[in-house]
Image (cartoon, rainbow over all chains, first blue to last red; front, side, top):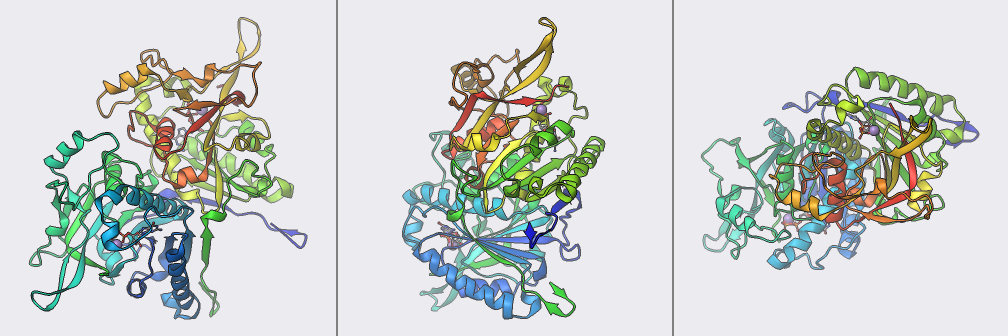
Length: 310
Length: 310
Ligand SMILES: Nc1nc2c(ncn2[C@@H]2O[C@H](COP(=O)(O)OP(=O)(O)O)[C@@H](O)[C@H]2O)c(=O)[nH]1
Ligand SMILES: Nc1nc2c(ncn2[C@@H]2O[C@H](COP(=O)(O)OP(=O)(O)O)[C@@H](O)[C@H]2O)c(=O)[nH]1
Ligand SMILES: [Mn+2]
Ligand SMILES: [Mn+2]
């Protein structure tokens, strides 16, 4: 704190959490949004989509966490290239308030990141526990006293409406999840098509409850595996194009592909359990923990965002 | 970001969590310590003791959270007076790296803060849930990527060895708790004496486990109440003056009066549950959650700190 014999008083900051508003009109109220992205691979389409978000960039802080391995190093290099372009030479209105890049201090538990390998059932517990820890490291070290909203956005979400943040915040819900789809080439119709992708947004079922009640204390329920039929109502299948875009449904489990969270939910202590929590883990456990803290998750079955297709 | 037509590039920070060391010799390794204190009343003795800590102040960030009521306002005023003195006009080596003061956005659930009232058993669940949320708000908004250690220190801890941080860190444990005592005037011996104060540092017992197993899912176990005999082994009673000052014991529950935590424990997601977690809440629930994440708590029965006596 001493420069050339002259000392400058160290910073003292006083925050009144009451003055941090979290409203359905965050642009007008100049609310700070923290966009958090765990990232293994860098997709240019993710960055391009992020850049197109119309929420004032000067109110947005970006936080990334990448593994400390070869794949993570490559993604970090690509990410930094884009950041430098935007923050240094790009037009001023494109620039974000601040950007934090974390490199995680543990190895991902499964070496391959291929879709088939990472979705194998026996890999889920270790993989999702590691993901949970990565999300928590990112969250605990970037959330500030003046953050109003946290947008969780996976690194492979490549297409969203540009008004994503405003549209989700408009619902004024503690946790709100859009419906995550994936575009693909349909061999039958010989044309581009789309299909549901994120199965972690769900409403609980008696079958799942019953399965859980018979499990050992450290076992977890998984969604989207035919060897474990839960009969939960999946938001992925609730999409009705003819219905209101802003249709709401209550959710008991959420995914992390895209999820807007009021910062107070996290500040109360809601995080991503890396251990079985009511037999749930990571983002699904997070929804349960938020619920235990009095915060209910909401899903928007007709509001779509799109996942990369490997 | 624009001043007088000139734009300055917004900050981009890159942190390698691997480079943040957390060692038994934190002074030599220049490790950052975050001291977190939830505060309802300001005690001059607390501040004086804090000032006397020999850990380099330029490596210490202080974080406070105070309630937004009359008592909290008074404490904030007193606290700010001392901070101004230290940070602005005091000797440079006394100054802390930075100081963050948060005002909580919810009312404490019980109006009176008298010792008798706040220790009533029927007040515990709501009181400790509120405390847990206050601790989490403080933790989530102040922990940074370069924090190595978090020292939880209650506002009514008025006497510790000046080498507290170094002494606790030396044990190189994920969570380490000294033994919290209280000085009082002993009417029998007509002289000053001391007695155990913090009963939340304990080793679990079969009786407590058995009580828990018969409880409803939302019930909590409490320590130090004769209507709920847990037969846990309390660190408060393990103090043996003739033994090594640095004697270690494993703990299953911890208190928050004074507690040194490796920042990685929090970064992995360990927080203070405001809901019953294995029938435990707040700091006791925190120890259990840390354990679920693979981090074991340690107590130092012979290493004493002192709580204010009202
Ligand atoms: N930092 C970090 N990010 C990860 C890790 N594994 C996956 N991710 C990222 O976390 C998000 C979700 O993981 P992903 O593998 O896409 O999950 P899936 O779409 O459900 O198969 C994506 O943004 C990944 O880039 C990891 O070990 N460390
Ligand atoms: N911010 C905040 N701090 C609190 C609240 N209640 C207690 N504290 C502080 O939390 C710590 C523990 O509370 P205290 O009442 O001393 O607990 P006890 O010693 O176990 O009776 C002390 O530092 C208090 O000043 C609250 O509602 N809000
Ligand atoms: Mn993905
Ligand atoms: Mn106290």
